Image 1 (cartoon, rainbow, N blue to C red):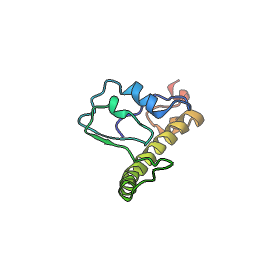
Image 2 (cartoon, one colour):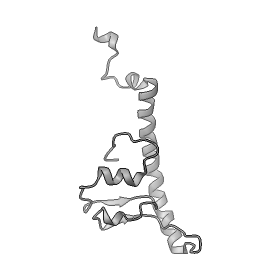
Image 3 (cartoon, one colour):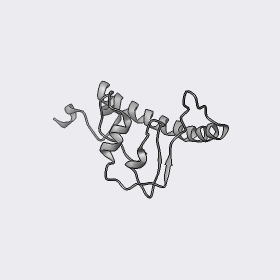
Length: 114
């Protein structure tokens, strides 16, 4: 994980956040892994390596090759998803219960400062 953005509201779509944060970023040296809902990403990202799973349509099921590609991408996305979940849990714990202050030894309690 290379970047953590500010917090956004729950109703903000991931693609909207992506366009807002990375509007002027050059992705040519990176591979970009995204969800299948990031349709039109090529208009916003100049990268030779965009990995997006195939999406089945109502009357157009996935082929065996497309299912195999999606399975390979899912292996990476599970690892990335777990990393994001751990990061969210850590910061959520700190903001809601105050245990961040107990965990982070560099931030002493106010009574220590007096």
